[in-house]
Amino acid sequence: MPISGDLYRQLGRASAGAVSVVAAHEPESDAIVALTISSFVTLSFEPPLVMFAIQRNTVSYASMVTCRAFGVSLLEAGQADVARHFARPGRERAGHTAFDAGHVVQVPLVPGALAQIECLTNEVFMSGDHAIVVGLVEAARTRDGEPLLYFGRQYGLFTPLTGS
Ligand SMILES: Cc1cc2nc3c(=O)[nH]c(=O)nc-3n(C[C@H](O)[C@H](O)[C@H](O)COP(=O)(O)O)c2cc1C
Image (cartoon, rainbow, N blue to C red; front, side, top):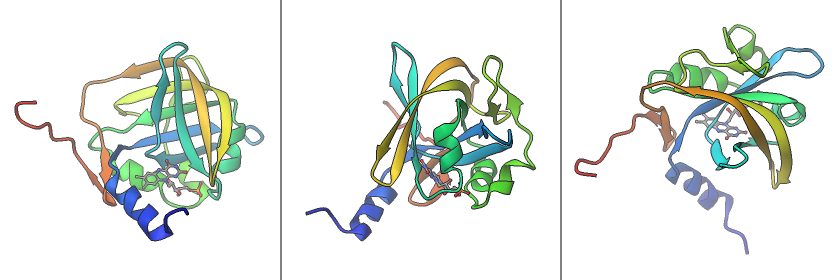
């Protein structure tokens, strides 16, 4: 028998993750759709694939599962305000934001992010109340810095263990 919703939510709070913003041009209107995620994973080395999961009841869902391409920006430690902004409900949040343009694929990227990744949508899998979106990485760049992390409903920084 599956576990209760309360226990499942506790598991979510016990799981720490890096924070990213995934963004795309909406196919019909060319408006930008962007949301904060912590489900980004580097998936495959050859070919280079990455993935994220999107909740089916988000406003962004339809655009993110039908877009031809998407950008992933791994946020830097100082970008908690960016993460908060793109986690707010409502579509209008992307309209007031300046994005960098992809170099190879036409995707919106967050300026100053620790990594900017340009993807062509490769596959979409339905799984429970989420879809898993897999992207083929066409271009990417990283910069020096620390990642923005999320744990127990709080943003925070990475602290290496001494001696590790
Ligand atoms: C730290 C953090 C991580 C999140 N990770 C995800 C995620 O991986 N997938 C997802 O669908 N939503 C995730 N969310 C929630 C979305 O950012 C949030 O639901 C957003 O408001 C969706 O808005 P929309 O319904 O207007 O598209 C996350 C939120 C936060 C604060």
